[in-house]
Amino acid sequence: MKNQNNILYRIRLLVAFIVFCLCGLGFLGFYYPIPLMDIQVIPLLQRLILNPTGLIVLSFVFIILLTILFGRIYCSTLCPFGILQEFLFLLFRKKDNSYSLATSVKYFFCAFLIGGLIGGTSLLIQRFDPYSLFGSIVSGTLWGGFVLFIIAGLVYWKGRYFCAQVCPVGTMLGILSKYSIFQVHIDKKLCVACALCARQCPTGSINIKTGQVNNETCVKCFKCLTKCARGSIYYGKAKEKKNIFVDMDKRRWLTNSAILGVFLISIKGGFLLAKMLATSVKKIILPPGARSSEEFINKCLNCNLCVQNCPMGILKKANATYPAIHIAFQKQYCQYDCKKCSDVCPSGALRRMSLEEKQRTQIGLSQIDTGLCVKCGRCVRNCPREAVTKKRGEFPIVSEQKCIGCGKCQSVCPVHAISIKEVETQKLL
Image 1 (tube, helix red, strand yellow):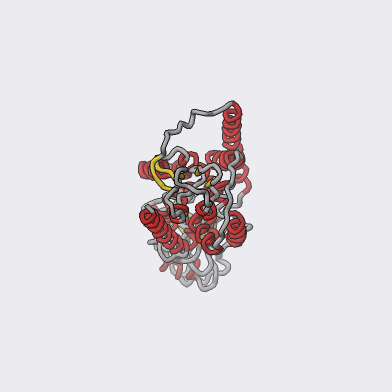
Image 2: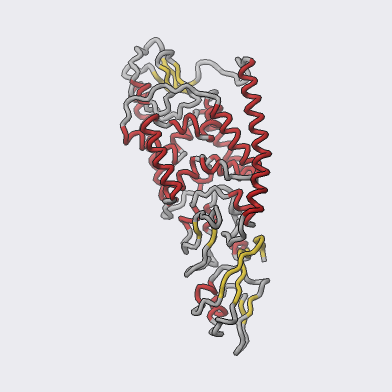
């Protein structure tokens, strides 16, 4: 039994390590593991809301079935932010992580964040979404540095407390995990209450006094299985079937009703917040597929995956001018035959499109300052869509029906006479 537990733990750890490395390389711009990003829960949920295609629905169903079968295995093998906390937990070598009693606060908090997302804005949840937090850390943002400092301190103090008591993804999956088919159990006949398993549990899910495991907060890291010399703790089928609608007293029904109320109010609040953000943002040049500044500000999770993978380096992180990803044309331009930002965005903030669609998407419009222009014709020769024309001895003219605002003309102009003007809404030409 112990050998089997060790093998199970090592396999899980190996899978987690591979996933973590692939995700890290993706955020560093070296490699992009599309399937791993596309099954991150919050981006996937937003895509399900925005554009519920068959593949998106199947991906969401896969996560649900995975959790119903095996519990919160997603949190220990597929979530890069959760795996990061596990590595920190191993680094600190914390020897005692006492049992944490779950409270209803996390359900209210989760309902508040998910409601806002369904209401139409990601502004609230992006600060607590594990995928977005991991992206902020790896991409080296100031916010990411702050998050890493806080999480490192939290892990040292309480292990994976964020995963067990704060994370909205963990809360949602935990509800399913509580009723999963395979769970972690303690055989009370074999257990001698030595507490070795409880001390090593990163989420404080083992109550050694009662001999029970809280499979709702347990992230299925299987570390506890390797510590018991007697084999009294094991992973297997649930001994008794539980029903989510059974054993609910009046107080719990009232609590659940209150959570539902928070959820519904938050949907309305998210709708109002989305409208407020839409009316306050400045017009700015955005990546192809963003549609408009007003819509993009409410959909972008600020994970910075597109920024890290842009080959020309024109995508910029959120700043005081625009609190989401945007384009800043300086010495470079948007490559005509590149659509990587659209390909890598897992949240639906950038619509995925074919190369032909991208090449016809107008993200801006070139403007020529005739007071600076020297009529050299470089803009004409370098325009990939032949949107700039020029007669001998005259100034170049930009066709609004052909120009997509890629910025190549601006990058080749020797006297900086060309600028790219933002458009109100992106459109296909």
